Image (cartoon, rainbow, N blue to C red; front, top):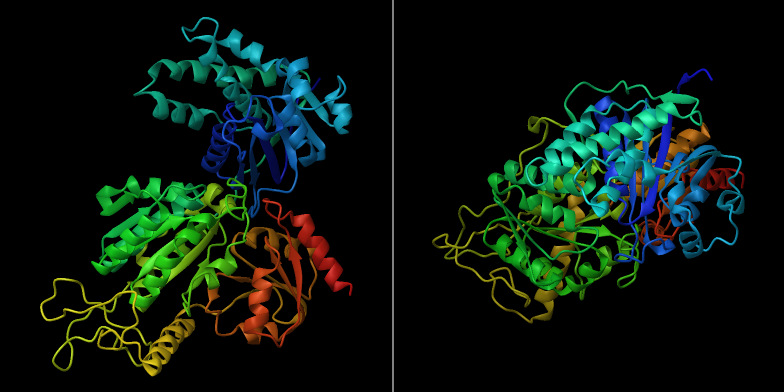
Length: 612
């Protein structure tokens, strides 16, 4: 059979297997090699929520989806062109994501009676039972071939089986023309020092998987996804959690302040703390606290002492931090709180993504306790969002909540590393002088209502801050009139931040029949859906700044007949908009399944609303 090489614009690959099969590493390596090749990409790691579920069970399936393209890629893709399933459970849970034209590679050695029963198959033909028998099925004895590949090595059988993922990675690289050089370099870099004995075996298995795919007749064609015509510069593949950490480091540099992060590990935010801990050379100080409350309280202490302070968490941790958030509001100290949202409530589904913490970020504290809330919209945008959160916190003397999501924190995309000269200086309002006989900590700038920041140790600037209400001089006060004044000033200070944030931008016509509205990590899916619809009177307005809203929000909304608010919750942003701008009518598209939108779901909602 004559071999063909077919040029395609984009492709979606989904790797799935038991949580011990190395699917996250396999997908990450495929994505990174594609980034080095020059493709645009977006990834979606799909971790099991259970900690090490029994082998071969549906609950233990771990997946990694990567979408690569020769033009801009904004989402991990709705459905896959290639599914790699390492066992029956992986096939059963992921068959629904296969396109009608998809290829399916399975490890035929894993499809024995025991694992078939564990996965709940009732017949001996899983493909027919799942209704995917019309796809291109490629059963390969991957376990056997991996053992044969390493039969001459000195590795034990358990270590050999851990190399199966490299065999499948080699097959995928052959099918889509991925060079192996970058993966070879990664293997050498990762294992050369601590486990040099596994370097050559992993490289051999990878090459053997590539050669096997080239030799079998079941794969008559391979596919070529050409590099993207991207802006010149230095790129790297980056996850949202890495980008948040680096954005905070950049803000530390631009403000001239040391960075302190006090946090408690929690899925899916832990990666930010881990990344910051690697950068002591840049002045970052990290503390793994004993609990969530200790994490934020150490950060507030660091802010009082003159640091750029941050704490990282997810929804359950944000709940625990609520009283200390009130302390940060009352003391008016700069603090960045990063909430990488996951499916809730309570412990919920720790590894699944949602946008269900918005109300908590806006309102989840005692008393009148306003603070700015901003949201990141892509893994690479997490850098800019973290930088701006720090800038707002430092220049306006307020805690700021930065909302990310599990989809963004763990997902990745190529990022053009920007020159730091493109970023503005950050100028905290340090107290340099005062009028009168002593420093008054809550006297405010008449334009911004921002108080001055006096660092402990400044002679003559002794003052008191704390959780009890005070007057402008810092003296404790339970006077009703003073309390009313201080509450209103703290709220007005946040409202006035609207004058220092960018205006709301519209992608598409400046007026029309429908405005699609979203916030956070839905951006890629919404912009793809609006583009796919190709309707001249449909536009997108995506919010990075939530509290306060951009100053021109009402003006933008007024130019459209209908507003469709799309979010991964039951309608929290729509409800917030109804409170802030009740003069407009809002339609909703909501999803609460621990998964991102499918572009097709948004397209259907747009067409339904246009048809009304």
